[in-house]
Amino acid sequence: MRREAEVLCEPRPGAAQHRLVEVPADGLMELLRAAEAETGVRLSTMRRGLDEDTAAFIAAAAAGRHVRRILDAEAVHG
Image 1 (cartoon, helix red, strand yellow):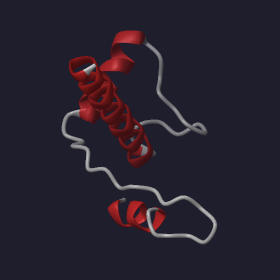
Image 2: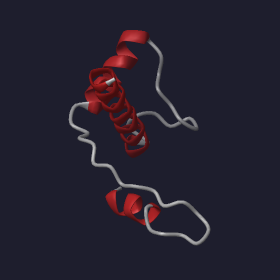
Image 3: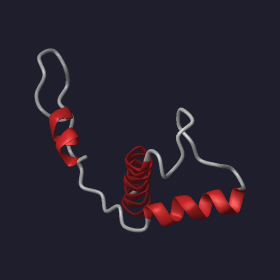
Image 4: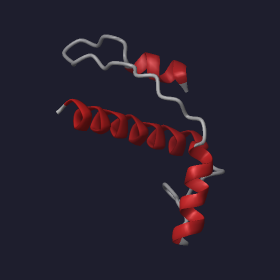
């Protein structure tokens, strides 16, 4: 997955350049499974669940974790 992210961050003519941000993914799968169990709602994308499309779910959860860090930092630093 990292190589795919690096490719997406490479310069492209006429497009703004993306920035690769390292986000720890530890514990995310457990949190996703706990969310399924707690809500009773099966997480799925295009009919694929956590086990069938693990990378997509971990990437989305990592993005959420990154946003949370940004919001927490803004709250502290105003």
